[in-house]
Image (tube, helix red, strand yellow):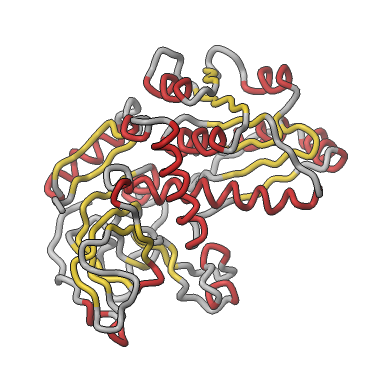
Length: 354
């Protein structure tokens, strides 16, 4: 990782007078950025020898092209991460998160520059308006959209049951995604148990408890033991980044349950599993496992609603997620050091002031 100078973008970079120039205020960093820096995956745009990282954006509109409607200078916005540049039918209908192309385009991840920069330019369909009252937490929109996508897909899949009334949910992982998943599930009225290795007391456990959910340390009680005592879970949301837990989660589902996998694992880890038992229980128990990756506009809008409701129902909770605020792009090394500190939940870079 290094700091470099790039040409300042212009609204004219988007054809047809449809460019929106955004001043970046804040960028969230996560494990994806660490893995890209470790060269586990990631690709620079064509013709560039660098990839600007950062896919969790929050900014303010600085300038709009003459044919832009729906946005004006001063509006707070976040940008969708995936871009519909492929040839699949899903790209054509602006649902690039479901693309069937082998090559995909993601800001700060794959073939498109990210947002850890002073300005970027996008077309209006890639931007989502953020209400002013969310300006302090709006940078959480992208990770919250991952939750929105996962839960939307889960409910869509469960329409197969005609009647589905989930009561118990488990969240694996108490990092940013796990905590936001706990929030989203509590907002939907579920009884939630959140699992993580770290033993309490700690901030993550406090945040889970503040939502009326239950925190369980897997160092103190194995996940599958807890799942069996609970009678299984109607929904399990996996957000650990540790792939073997996906197979434990499959065994923790109740009948007709659904597992949502959100981790992206770039390694080559292998593990032995009780495959016959898992297969049998999935078939006879009508269980489902589904992966979720990034999000389209619908899911970003779900995220905005969840953040708004979360702030209203649990005042001050979202702000407590920000455990490391790094001032300025010059301090990028400090930001990555903060990512390595396991006590941190959300690391953000304060790029500029409004």
